[in-house]
Image (cartoon, rainbow, N blue to C red; front, top):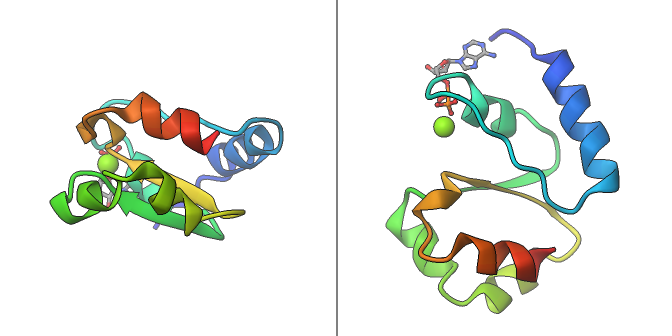
Amino acid sequence: MKNRPFWHDRIENAWKSRAVLWLSGVRRAGKTTLCQSLTEVEYFDCELPRTRRQMDDPESFLDGLRGKRVVLDEIHRLDNPSRLLKIAA
Ligand SMILES: Nc1ncnc2c1ncn2[C@@H]1O[C@H](COP(=O)(O)OP(=O)(O)O)[C@@H](O)[C@H]1O
Ligand SMILES: [Mg+2]
């Protein structure tokens, strides 16, 4: 796999000063692969119905992730993505 040091550094630096980062790009640009290669992240694929069900109750979902870095891939698949992000932030 090709390393992406530019994007790794950019994400890590931005994460120091922001609670929420938004990663956008065309399909198959490598967003998922990049996020999964970050260290110390809890990765969730919102494409999966089971994952979406976990997020139906945002507070209890986030309670279990306190202090952790969370990746929410395909977040647009949630019914109310901004509600989850606001509570998380
Ligand atoms: N850094 C990389 N090195 C090699 N292959 C990669 C890399 N990033 C992505 N790919 C490959 O490109 C394809 C699309 O990547 P993916 O992460 O699913 O993109 P996206 O999430 O932006 O749609 C996948 O087959 C993946 O294995
Ligand atoms: Mg993807």
